[in-house]
Amino acid sequence: MSLRHLLDTSSLSRQDALAILDTAEEMAAVSSREVKKLPTLRGRTVVNLFYEDSTRTRVSFETAAKRLSADVVNFSAKGSSVSKGESLKDTVQTLEAMGADAIVIRHGASGAAAQLAASDWTEAAVINAGDGTHEHPTQALLDALTLRRGWCPAHGRPPRGGDLAGMKVLIVGDILHSRVARSNVWLLTTLGAEVSLAAPATLLPKGISDWPVTVHHSLDAALAADPDAVMMLRIQAERMGGAYFPHAAEYTRRWGLTDERLTVLQQLQMGGTSEPALLLHPGPMNRGVEISAAAADSPQAKILDQVAHGVAVRMAVLHLLLSQNHDDGSTA
Amino acid sequence: MVETPPETAQVMSAGDIERALTRIAHEIVEAQRGIDGLVILGIPRRGAPLAHRLGEKLQRIDERFSRDAVGSLDITMYRDDLRSGGARTPEPTDVPPGGIDGATVVLVDDVLYSGRTVRAALDALSDLGRPAAVRLAVLVDRGHRQLPIRADHVGKNLPTSREERVFVQLAEVDDVDPADESVLITRGGRA
Image (tube, rainbow over all chains, first blue to last red):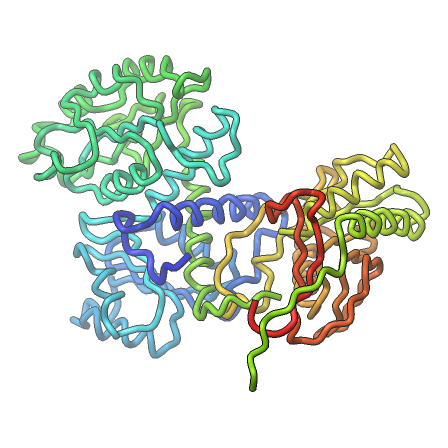
C-alpha cells in the first residue's frame, strides 16, 4: 500500500484495491465476533466533515472508526460555522489544529476532497465520502466486496485475493448525476469486470462513448444480455418530473426493476454456474420507483450485505491509510 | 566504520526443523497430560504452517486429536508499532469452531525476539474468548526480549546479537523446496 489519501477509484491501482478488499475480509470477520472492537487506531482522531446530508455514509464511517478504537468527531455543515460563511480552508485548518489524523469529507463540489489533499491546509489523510457528481470510492469498494463474495465462491474460489475477471455487471439508472456509478465503472473495470449501463439518454453523461462500458437504451435488452449482477441506482426526487424524464411512473415502467422484470432477473445465473445473479442497490431505496418491494426483499438482493460490507471496507481504508506514516520496513 | 559483506550461516536444516517440531509436540502432550482441551494457534505468516505441522504430529501421537483444533491468529491489528511499521494486509484469523473458552491455547511462532508479537497475540486472544491457559511454542528463541515474556517450548535457543538477522524459510510461505527449508542467520551488512 502506497496510498496516502483515498480520493477516487479512477487512479486506484488493482493492487491497492485488492489490498483494501482483502483487509476488509478480515474486518468483516471482526464484525461477527462477540467483541467487535480492535485497538488499532487507539488515540487517533477521525473527523467526519459532511457538507451534504448523509446518514448512512456518516454512520458507516463512524461505526468503522469506533470499531478501530479511534475517536470520532462529527462535523456537519448545517448549524455550524459554515452557515456563518466560513470557508473550507478555514474549517479544515481549525480541524487540523485540533489534531485530526484523518478527514472524511463529503462535499457538493466535485473535486473538494482532491483540493483538500493537494493543499497544505492539513497533514491528515483525506478520504472522499462523495464529492459532487465525481466519485464515491468507498461505496464502489463495498459494492466490489459484495460482488466478489458472490462471484468467487460461485466459482469454487475463496474471495480473498480474487478479482472480478469475466463478471458482467449492469448498472441501471441516473448515470449522469451518480458518483456511485462513476466510481463503480472505474473500480469494477480495474478488477476485470465487464460493466454495462442502462439509462434514459437524458441521464447519460456527455463523453460516455469514451467510458469502458457498453450502453443499453432499454432495460429489457440489458437484462437479456445475461448480467451476473444488477445494480439499481436511486432516482433522486429532484430529478423527477423535470427535463430528464416526464414522470416517476413513466420511469418505473421503462427503467424500474418491476415485479415482471424481477421474474427475468430470477432466471439469471452467474457466469456458467447455478448460483443466482446478484441484485445491488446503494440505498436509500425508493420502493416502487426504481425497485419494487418484492425485488428489494428477494433473496437475490444483497442490499443489507452491502451495508455490513460498508463498515468493513471503511475499517480497511482507515486502517491502511492511518497505519503507514513512515515506511521504514522494520519488522519485529 | 567498515561495511563488512553480509555473511550467512545455516543454523537449522529441514531435518532439524522436523525433529524440533516432533519434540515440541511430545512436550506439549506431556505438559498437558494428554490432548484434551488443546487448541493450537499459529501466528501468521510462518507460525500458521508450523501450527498445522504440530497438529499433524499431535494426531500421530494421539489420534483423538482433531485437526479442527488447529487455527491461526492474526495480530496485525493489535501491534503497537503500526504507526512506524507500514500497513500490512491482515492475514486470516481462523479459530476452531468450538472457540477458545476454557481451552489450553498453544501459540506458535517462528522466531521469538522482542516479545511484542506475543504481547499483541495475547491481546488478540482476549478479544476472542477466555482460555484456561496460554502457552507459547517457537521454532527459534533468539533472545533480546523487550517484555517479560518467555516461551514454554523452544525448538532451538540461538544466541544472537541485535545486528544479526534470523530468517526462517518454510515451503508454505517462502516458496522453497521442503528439503531446502532452513533457519539462517545473517551477520554484517544489511540484508
